[in-house]
Length: 316
Image (tube, rainbow, N blue to C red; front, side, top):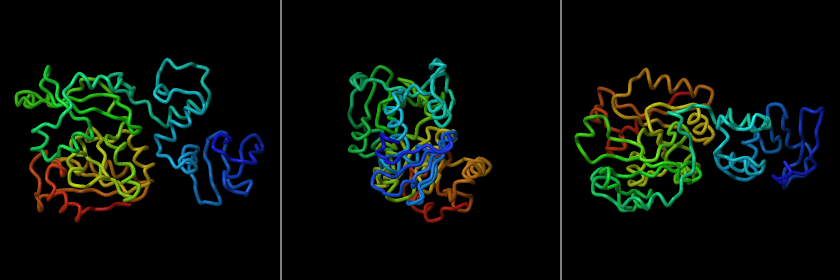
């Protein structure tokens, strides 16, 4: 609280910390429960937890607030999920660990990797992505490249802080596509803990108060090529607990634009997971519309995307 610039900090009954905002005079404007870290800012109608408070006072995104807390308390932001962390860690670190989630994908974790690994690839726009509707300037923005050794387009995976954490390779070989090897990780990372593109689209999401959620990283670049800059990708058709938390904390209406072929049952399961959040939208290409080809993403067909957006179904 001191590092946030709060004043008149006082502990009450060993259970609550009360204080004034950095620019405020009300000594009890902020109240934080020391057991749960739930907080309330009465003078500004802000409620949530300690991360929400940091977001509000420092004007940071959720991942940035998490990073600030870890830096302030002397923890490594990228190690809060490691199983070999000290058993003497503070309760705060354990709580952050629960918030961040404990899902494991083949033991891959979100870890920074040196930007110098990009030197192993030819960083330049490619004709394959241009044909898929991704403009050269957008390819440059995402540092798209090419790996001659594996004959794959390289897609650097950045986390929400803009830190390089992995590299995905997309084959240009039709045989690999048929063998379900279209995408492989040249430098593995945990896709279920990330929202691809958020480091570049966060500002627009906050301004629009709306976020399009697509499956593939390519979809983010396709929509941005058409000026739709409030979009993120899951990396799959499923929403992990970590991704759910990050989407909710955007405080923007999520609109799912998943690939053609996703079942109504799957969409209903996603909608139900947001039932305590508020409004959630779904772009669904039903039999009557039939705007997309099988397994095609709305991002693959911008005209279909616009038509489906006009027919978004919202659920509360």
